[in-house]
Image 1 (tube, helix red, strand yellow):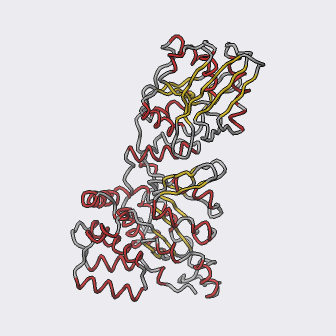
Image 2: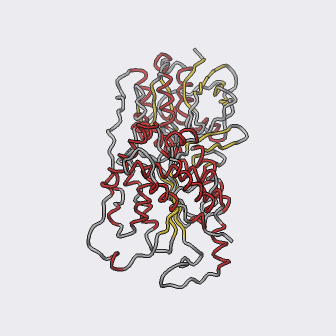
Image 3: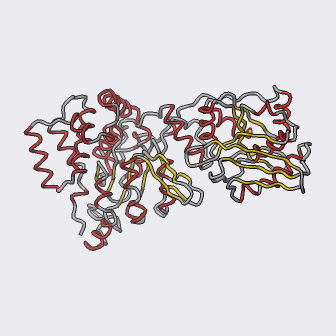
Amino acid sequence: MSLSTIFTRAQLGISAPLVRVETHISNGLPALNIVGLPETAVRESRERVRSAILNSGYEFPTRRVTINLAPADLPKQGGRYDLAIALGILVATQQVPAAAVETLEFIAELGLSGELRPVRGVLPSAMAVVEAGHGLVVAHADAEEAAWSHAAPVFGAQHLLQLCRHLCEGNILAPCSPTAPKFGAAECPDLSDVQGQLLPRRALEVAAAGQHNLLFHGPPGTGKSMLAQRLPGILPPLQSGEALEVACLYSLVGASRLTKDFLVRPFRSPHHSASSTALVGGGSLPLPGEISLAHHGVLFMDELPEFGRQVLEVLREPLESGEINIARAQASLRFPARFQLVAAMNPCPCGYRGHPVIPCQCSPHQAANYLKKLSGPLLDRFDLQVEVGVQPGAVILQQQPSESSAMVCARVNSARQRQLERQGMLNRSLGPKALAAVCRLPAELQKVLECHMEKLALSARGVHRVLRVARTLADLDDVEDIADGHIMEALAYRGLSRQPTG
């Protein structure tokens, strides 16, 4: 038989469409042609495959070899097709039995010696293999990651010769099984390290309970970053499905979360010099950005006004939709990005505006221009805007330990459980209809809210966010109805948006 078909997977964002590697060997001058929209790295596989086959002790045909990567209109990138192409040639020349590859898919790059090398995006491909009901063969270094998809079976091979012996003789490679995940909660910084700062600590707990976006502002050295870094420690661990979604995104960028942090919510902290592409994803070969790597976790943006205005504005859409769409000439890719945004900023360029001791060196115009870097629509998307003030020395040096992350996490878990039982989602995700159903206010409390809406010039989005925060405060207090105190506290968390910007 001079014709063979081998199954493999392309990488198209978070999806992994099936690719059929069709190999035909015919008479003619010796040549190896690859068709089906291959990019440079795929076309270069001709030389890698030739050397790998010869160095594994097999014969490379001295005839005309045509390889079609179907579907032909799907872009093919990277070295992930090397193994499938090599096996297509070996099956077409009857050096490997065709029956042995019918129910398997193959994803690996080949070295010139025949060594199987790992590739990016193995886990999303393995998840797609499960849906197809096939087994999977990958490089040995990728086997444990692929096994998390629970595909049956997953084989990890170190060399092309080893794999071919397994296909010909069987029982050479043993199926790989995933190890049990470990929750590394002890690795998260603990909230007990923070002395004082009762209001910011309260805001951090509220943000964790309802998955609200949070902005800390205040002079440098008051603990804004310290507080934000302790948010993952008071969040519940990822569910297994969420953890696999996050692991798939990390697999696309060549990183692995299949270790002790598998169930820990991701915490990403990009530098303020990051570009919009680094933040939301993209590039010639689109990859997930920081907002997608923070999926189901926390995106912390320190020194928020130092980010470029264009960089900050690209956050607005994914904050509402929970995903980012990247359009390219050949395809439009979607990456999930349901993250919790936490940011920190100084009140002015020098940082000491409002400091009780250190005088501010900035003019009112400079301070106003500094705040203008944050647009009204972006600022409106922060449910909680909390000042982190300077603490007295006696508070900072006190020896009495403060409340630990474990104690706060217990309250957060209870509040989240109430939300899920009542409405099937966290308060942050409540739409207008669901919000009206779970945030019914008595007439007198509604008039109070209307009065403050006019005084604070709250937008419709701002009012909805106040109601969501008030609902979270009621859940933390384990009460069914929103009270006056909950509304007033939620309004108090909108302090920065009330300040004049010029």
